[in-house]
Length: 335
Image 1: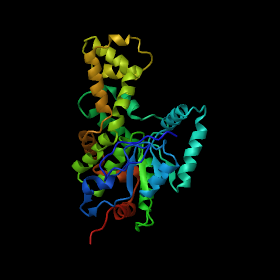
Image 2: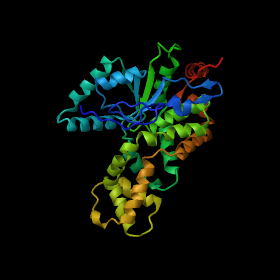
Image 3: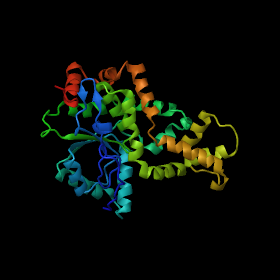
Image 4: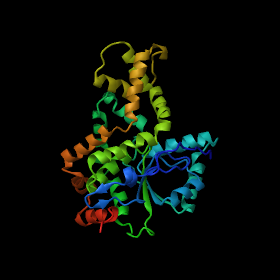
């Protein structure tokens, strides 16, 4: 497997391991996240982008920094698409052999994995997210709030499995195996999981938003690549061609055009420079991690479920004893 070195990022909270992006201990942001009951326990709550390019050496490094169990929030189509792309790069016709080698490497280094999809059959990668919420390709965060509401109402069973693991963790640091939670980019589904959890534990919302925003640094070196893929998608090209006509485009029309996909039907040369720049800025926003997006999502949680605790009770199904165990395991009790 080709080794891809990542650019240096501030450590803590980031860790540099080849072939994985946006890897960090979320508890170590800004010298350590604090709650009214004490600091968040480090070495337990890791987050990242997808892990499919890690080899055995990479998994060994993951184990050394404390990761013992990986929770994959991605859908089946996302996972299959990722493996097919890797197999193609390696010149393999069948991705199953590549997948098997990866699984064996992980197991040999003592790391376990659970597939806990928020959407089992729906591609929710940043590119598809942008297309699904195309009518919000403007400067507001309304699109992300709608997208994150979609995640929240579907994530109960997925989040439950992760939280059950955290609830059962040993208190002794030598015995605990940290959890790595990831999706495709480690931004949206992963961000919502950590946003709700940290809000429940009592981390101030502005600090949660700052931690979420670190993903812009974590993905900074591949951001242009993701934006380029989004800009080449048929639906977005149709949208840009429509903008180039100079006609006023409503948000509903934009959504209909982008989501229709299919052949572009217009010569790329007909897309104006102004429309290209508008599209690029919109794409940058859609693959970004603005603080306002997380703040809007947390406000939504408060409006709809009363609080993060209300969400964990009503959607995830946690009860008093489990919520208390979660606090006990994830907050360092100050003497």
